[in-house]
Amino acid sequence: MSKRALITGLTGQDGAYLAQLLLNKGYEVYGIIARRSTPTVWRLDELGIREEIRFIEADLADAASLIRAVQQSQPDEIYNLGAQSFVGTSWNQPLVTADIDALGVTRLLEAIRLVKPDARFYQASTSEMFGLIQAERQSETTPFYPRSPYGVAKLYGHWITVNYRESFKLHASSGILFNHESPLRGIEFVTRKVTDAVARIKFGKQKELRLGNIDARRDWGFAGDYVEAMWLMLQQDTPDDYVVATGVTTTVRTMCEIAFRHVGLNPDDHIVIDPAFFRPAEVDVLLGNPDKARAKLGWTPKTSLEQLITMMVEADLRRVGKE
Ligand code: NDP
Ligand code: GDP
Image 1 (spheres, rainbow, N blue to C red):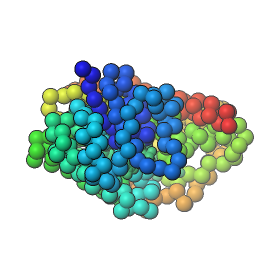
Image 2: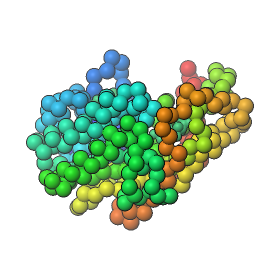
Image 3: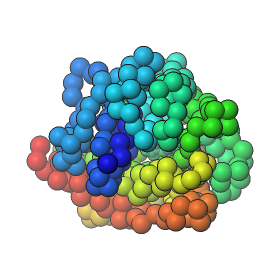
Image 4: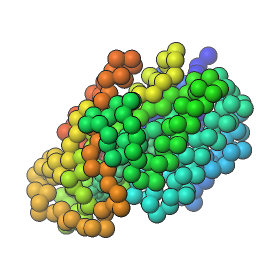
């Protein structure tokens, strides 16, 4: 009999790639979909998998809906990817961010405890928990120091996952994933904002690109590689926490250069520094140490930043060209 998976955040970047991966492995994929006034399934359509998903209407703010989702899907594996995931927004909506990214995790864990305690659980934790970094390369043992309401909320989500594993013996794992991007990345994140702008500038539809702190450094990987690590965590006999990263850090400035040069443009002719995009508290640098994931999961990233940004620029050129 095929395995069943339940995904929250199905309509997001990672949810779409994870659903594709699980379908390819023969899983029955159930995804919770929150009610919105306009359709949110464009990523599933881009991957051509919408018809294969079993949708369940639920919301991480609504505990009863999560209980029903677990009852209805009877999943072997549950991936909690749903979140208010944008750091910038978390200063404007700190309470929504805490409700979904922190308490939402407890609501889902409670649903699992009540309905399907033998299900394996994945929590989407984040390198933003390291924030003001306490070690040059951040690993599973590096102390946390979040720098945004998002990071603080996710830290709660991480620890409640650890706590339910220790308290109730749930097979609950937390993936501490560093930034990962793709052509399906939300437009507000810096990589996609840049690749979309590069395509628009190339087609003459835009002239300048307004950015904030381009000296910030991130450890960027490809989302398609990172969802494999999520799945691998739930295939282990013992639940655990893992850093998932490339081990390479790059400035926003250099990432921009890769994107602009790919279409023969000079970033200095187009980038305008705009204080509106500076953050109240910044995470200056992130650099992950993925040794544990490599050793225990056999996971390694397959896509370089150059390949990733090129893939994203090409996808945005196709999109803008069709507009
Ligand atoms: P996205 O922003 O692309 O997707 C977020 C998903 O959460 C969407 O499907 C969204 O639904 C859903 N969602 C938001 N609010 C609710 C709610 N109240 N109830 C149910 N679902 C909700 O994020 P990513 O795919 O990039 O990230 C996946 C997870 O991994 C997130 O938890 C994120 O915080 C975390 N993460 C991401 C990293 C990255 O670099 N991408 C790094 C580390 C962690 P809708 O489409 O309806 O808005
Ligand atoms: P984050 O690491 O989850 O916050 O991912 P983002 O892609 O939103 O931001 C990565 C880094 O790029 C942060 O240090 C931002 O301050 C920096 N950055 C600089 N300019 C911009 C911008 O215009 N938009 C965004 N989103 N980030 C920017």
